[in-house]
Length: 269
Ligand SMILES: O=C(O)CCC(=O)C(=O)O
Ligand SMILES: [Fe+2]
Image 1 (spheres, rainbow, N blue to C red):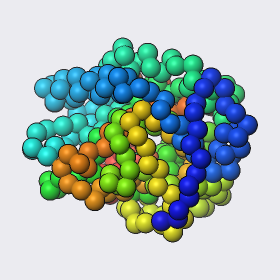
Image 2 (cartoon, protein in one colour):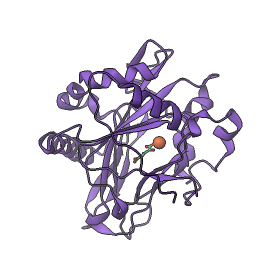
Image 3 (cartoon, helix red, strand yellow):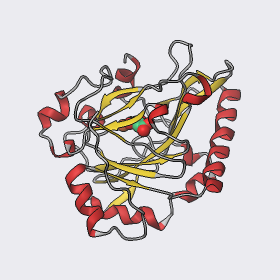
Image 4 (tube, rainbow, N blue to C red):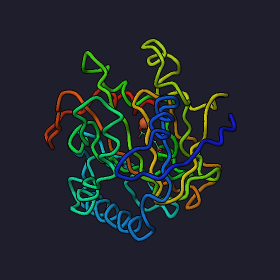
């Protein structure tokens, strides 16, 4: 792994020139201490409430997106990937109104918006490395915008905002990305790696180590993966929320939406 001691920033209501330049060049930004520990705990509490309800009701899809279930270190059923969480919690819904997120709109063509009802909405991931086969513990190389290639003609400009809820350092596996790949051509966007199948280290990759309450953003075209934690059980648990900021045609999903093809592809990883 390339050692790239990149600068960490603070997100306010307006991006600085340095932040914009860094994003243009590398395709990502890391903002420290965006939320206090209290807010992080509130968020986790909301996610647990949604999880418990979905488990009780055996919810299989949220706005057309399959719910991924798995188990924790004690064998209890947990939700490992839940889409559109802000549609089930006022608290999460209100978080999206934070003025600091609006500062990010500048990185996309106008008018940009938060995709609360588009793509996968506010999606929460809970990686857990256990001995149970099929548990969600890593994610292969991909870009987030190839999803568009499956069902629209043109790639929509987007960026993904990540909210870290756990410590995610070398101990956790975690996010790896290849800086600058947001500027690649369409061929590389499609074929640089085998989508979702390949999770091997890349000499160019950079590890994004976060603390609870940090926020990271990445361009939808950047190559990234989630590495497996070297640990098992609770030490490997990594919870992170993502939501998209997009521009282009408004395509909201509803709870009757059909399942996009990329989710079927994802299954075979
Ligand atoms: O867990 C992460 O940090 C990234 C997740 C991701 O890339 C995705 O869900 O598309
Ligand atoms: Fe992704």
